[in-house]
Length: 169
Image (cartoon, rainbow, N blue to C red; front, side, top):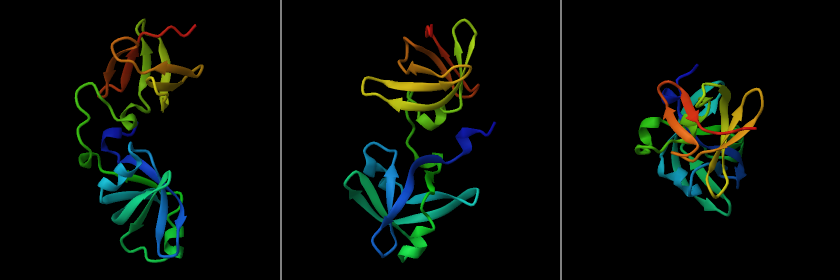
């Protein structure tokens, strides 16, 4: 398994073009959306790897964020970037603090019931308003509330395991 702690943390995706001068439309996974613009050194997923780029300008535009990257001066150059994930080095992110986690760190972890039954792996998380929810892929897909101390008993990033007390039947 690739160590997620050494991989860039994906904060958004280039989803389209904006104008003719090399600007791109970005879907940001950050809260608030424009927080993505706090990071000036981006990594773009391209050709199976990560390519460093520098953010030249950016701003919120409706529900999206628009950005211009250094060296991208026209619509054709910007079009080549469409579909690229935007990542940043983990070291650029603030420490989430004790008992808090980046979603990217939880995805792929094995979820184990307190009785030892392996339920599957975290495919993704969902924000529901009341609390976040783990989407666990296993013999059956399970939605498990991420409520620490009640449902989530322990998160061990080093071991790659989340222990839960969740009755699925």
